[in-house]
Structures are given as structure tokens and as C-alpha cells.
Image (spheres, rainbow, N blue to C red):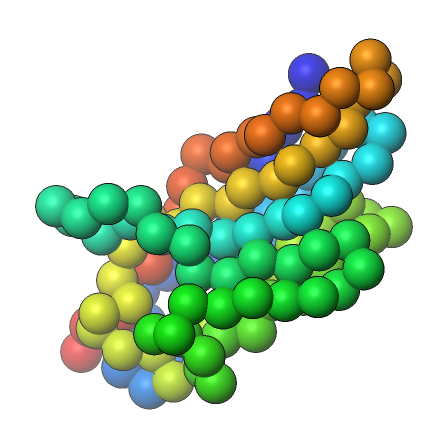
Length: 120
């Protein structure tokens, strides 16, 4: 079994910063792409940012220049540094990871979500 545990969500003022973390644990051989998604009330879940094992990144247009995704392969952890936060960034943020297990099959896993609220 594999678990993704997120942390770092909070209430922050507009213009502020938050750092989300997501640690993967369990029966892991290797982790391919990792990413962050978000879902606001009444909206569909959307990709925020993703990163390959080699460090190539991809961002949603709405967060380019404000958010930075990074990962520590030794710790099976992905981070999302969120700067210049806006009220429209308010959502539940979910970690996602594409993981190769000991049966050498690849599975897609989700974290439980962490709430980010941007409000004055």
C-alpha cells in the first residue's frame, strides 16, 4: 500500500505565501511524475503544477510566476511554494503521484487534500 500525506494548508492573507508538502510512503519502487491539483467549491479539479522525476515542470497559466513546484526524490516528497496568493487560489489542494510498486506495475495515487484559504 502507498500513502500520500499532505501538509501546509492554512488561512493566509492576499499577497502572502504558503508552502505545501506531500510525502509518499509504503511499497514504493520509484516515483515518476508528481503533481498538485486543486478543487474550488462548485468547480472541477484542475492541475496546478507537475514535475517529472528528472525535474521538468509544468504550470497552469493562472499560477505561473507565483507558484513553484519542487521535489526531493530521496524523501519521496513534493513541495508547492505558493507566493503572491490571491483569493481565487482558495481551494482544496491534492497531491498526486505516479508510483511504480513492487509488482512493477504503475499506479496513480491521491492524497487526502489540504485546505488553502486566501482571505483578508
